[in-house]
Length: 142
Image (cartoon, rainbow, N blue to C red; front, top):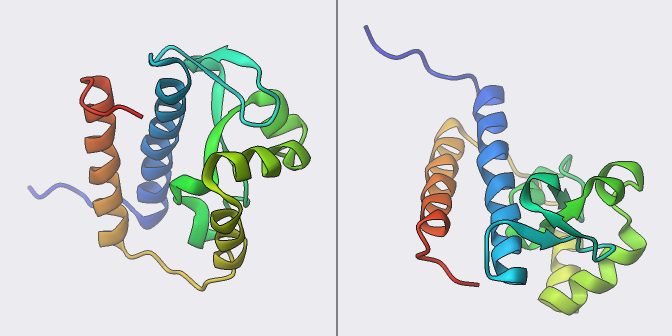
């Protein structure tokens, strides 16, 4: 019997899980050289991996930048959830991290009309599974 296909909504959710984990691991590795702790982009709080979230600079409601690695960075729950991203602190630190030109590009790109297909989601899930595997096996260095 063929395997039942996941709905687009379930594929999007699955991608979000893999993508968010990749972002948190990427930022931990870039900050401390290990996968166990990282800092919040907005307030510099040093936290264990499990306490970090993947915080979007441009909200995830904008599909054009929802899975853009430049748009998402490790954040503490306080900044991400309770301070709505703490964007006053996020933006200048993001400029320092990726350049003002790239931040401007994100702000412009957010308005792009994007629609992901089933295949797009499946491909991105495989990409982030691969990237996670590479990080966890020490094959990627930031």
